[in-house]
Length: 358
Image (tube, rainbow, N blue to C red):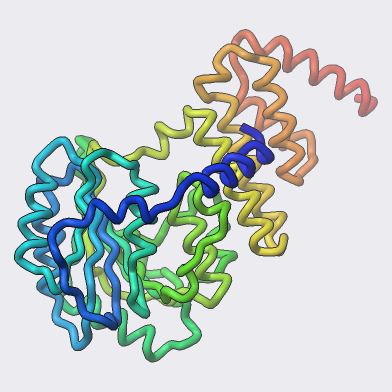
């Protein structure tokens, strides 16, 4: 889908989507505090094995302020809904739970809950992650209270691999992690990722209303953090206070790169980010878009379509900005070269050489 079609789809989506229709999924009769300092947006789906740990660590936080938990359970086929109902019944002054009678999808579930949040600060977490430090929330609130210039803050997190990969646990952030993150850091490369979702606490005023294009992006984290960084730097607290699970039910970026629709959406997202940042980072974003054009060569839809693959090489070369022949050659050899395409490449190379007088 090209950028114009993506934009049109976004407008149609907004025109017909009204998230208040999901208000009917409210469970019980919650009695939350009137003016919470913090809102926790929690969405869950098929997290029966994890949601108790997530909620227990959330409810055991030691804080000096009021907070609310806005929870969306998206019609899981396991016992997640029953556990959510149990906790919501036990903690009606803390938890406002929406238990969906049918699956509405991760984006709608998130946005409905996120837009329900009323706190000065907001934090988002999914039901298979959890916090490991009982003072996490207090530390982050104290940081934002004392750093009015910050749009958000985050901390380190431990990746726990439960995806049968056999990999050992590791920290997301290295000791060299900068204390402040700006927009430039977020677009230094494609899929730049060094902020665990459950570690980020943000000022709600900057994300209380989201631009239309945000709703059409398959990724929520990348554009959300750019929106925040455009309003102020994002601070880093050098402490590990949460766990990020990599499990078999998670979405794999590697798998997604085989999907043309996914890659087209990323191209759309970065084009919108470029416009949102008033084209200040055009060169960096063009390099990222170049990388995605190269990924399109090997997506399922382009398998065996050699002319289309070669066109993506040309588009990647044009976006990259380094117009040396060696750069083009590397792109072709690494991303596009197959036995059947070798002849076409050699023919093209000979034509280029003739044009260059070689």
